[in-house]
Length: 237
Image 1 (cartoon, rainbow, N blue to C red):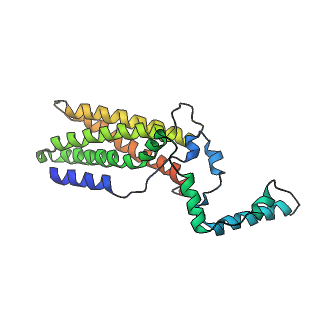
Image 2 (tube, rainbow, N blue to C red):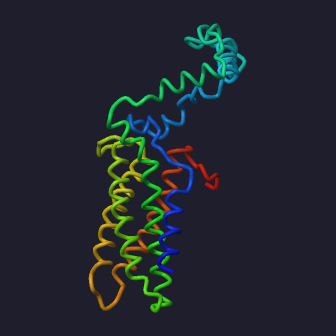
Image 3 (tube, helix red, strand yellow):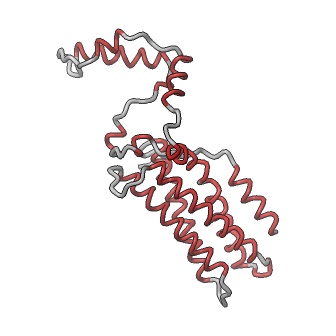
């Protein structure tokens, strides 16, 4: 049983789950409203670029209400040659180059978050099973999962601060929630590890800590999705 829990946790941590990375606008302290108005990447290819240019040029002549309304720079956009898909890909790759060691650390954050999520959730599941089947003897396994999960959570939170920028006054509400919830997860996971290693008559302490972590991890996943895919990414609100 112990080996099964360890193997499942490892598989979950290595699973190719969708990664959530902070948009460069979050790192530059841009508000959610401003980020929603940002133009999309050039990765759409030359056809998308041409369509955008033609639409902009059309709006510059007639506007939205059928009235003539010039838009600055529209003629230049319309006159610029369309990029081929290969050229657009090359431009996107060049724009995405690492600019500093801190930038590189921030880009590792989406990879690092998978490990503590898997380990801590498996620890919570093992603790839940132990509640009904004490004879399973999962205490050592739980301590291992919580300990490695806590270390991973601290590392992921540290890298997340590089991804979102080192500041306390974020203009983006989404980044505020994601940043501080992730920081709290790191702290609570260390508390859960400490509680799990203590000799106690009851397991109330680690169970409460793991229950809080499960809720916080689910919420953190949602806000990470909001950052990666945009507002209301689940389409239910």
